[in-house]
Length: 171
Image (cartoon, rainbow, N blue to C red):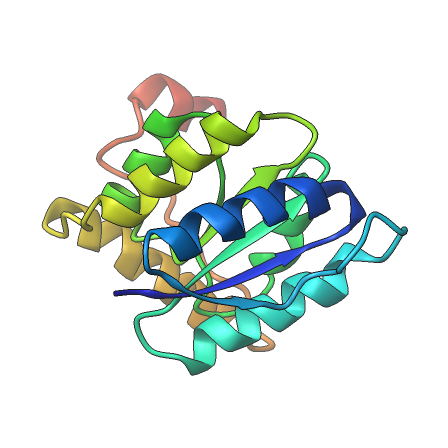
């Protein structure tokens, strides 16, 4: 079973407690790297702990929870190799697993309810990555990371086959 790292700030504490209890009852191995109360803390520190753990532990995944999930997703995606997805629906959670092979799920502790969050996490964990055509986009993300995490800038092509001519000429 997938090893999970979970982190939160004060705004995600209550949802984290509920998710950890549910996931442990399902047999998941959880490492809690989040805050242990609703006292105000700085979410980037907790996000960094989780993403570093995910990067060091092959085939693991992370869950990050702050008030909205937005801050956690921003900081998590600053790390090379992290594909953090902020989700507000079970469909989004399922699709980010299937199409983006996301390794971190970000949730808003004050934006979604416990039962909705449980459903989202279960969909995310149980949906396999489809690969195939989606691997092309993930390859481009990895290519961008190689350049953007260096001193260079990732060069964008003048046009792509997916870009309509009317948009190309507007640039």
